[in-house]
Length: 423
Ligand code: SF4
View 1 (cartoon, rainbow, N blue to C red):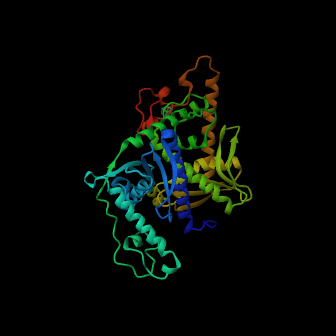
View 2: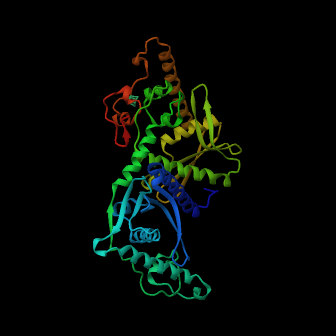
């Protein structure tokens, strides 16, 4: 990509996305726990050298920390570093219980771990570990003063945690040592995530958004004409994404918004989230971005690292969706930006709107939309609605029907797929 720094952009993107997502997770906590959750506590350590930022505290007694990790770490549990940091923060808040919520960067699955003291530690474990952390922090603080800057006075543990460890040329005091966390009990705890998931489920169920038009994102991803017809008829949707899917959507939105804030640096005339419609074919939606001078439509997609590694061109369903926006915006080019959710890396692809292949894709989509609209208009004129007049159901695609929010009327009795509520 010409306009974005290829080395720094992934790091900046990922950092911003995680900050953004932290804000979203904080809103989940505030909504689920209300006054029981106090977000963003700030303390200083005992010498007031260091500011300690804590994600939040529950019930005035449990410190919560959030970290975005890969799937292995989420399964394995928090690293010794994360345990030590959470314990130090809990101790600074006068507590001896902490939660570390690990969130998979790719699929937003989450697991909470509860940290307490082992019985044999006799209420000293948090204190001891926290004081070790503060000692290290003090040493690090001293090493940043002029007097110490020339030499390596930090302890091995400090060096290990220093972001410049790999490139530092100072003599160091032996090999790095991990924190000793044997006195800290680390247990998976589903209560916290269950309560958060219940809140997200309620949000999802309340979000129906029925509106009679053809949504490019729905049209390009469903093969079922009847589902598009139900949407045009304003049929009530039932079923909603469960909490896990909701998090995936929210993380996707976070990346979208961050990138949309960054894009004007490279394309000053860009308009983001521009509303577009085709009143003949009843398409209506919002393009992620549009540059009038370059006649360019932007399509932003987030993708897991597995999909990202294999990606050599835009996915067909994404081309269909973006073509609809591009046609409505009268753009000549589509710029696809794919974001690797694990690393923040970007891949971009430019696609000409007016190519032979894309013209025939557009032609097929326009014909399909016309056919659906004709049937829906006829159906709407019937005195007595006859479902047989609606477009055909898809056949042999139970996996799609199980996620369909019109299955309650079209195929009642079908068990929804995992990740979706029935109602
Ligand atoms: S349940 Fe299946 S056939 Fe019926 S509208 Fe949904 S996707 Fe189409």
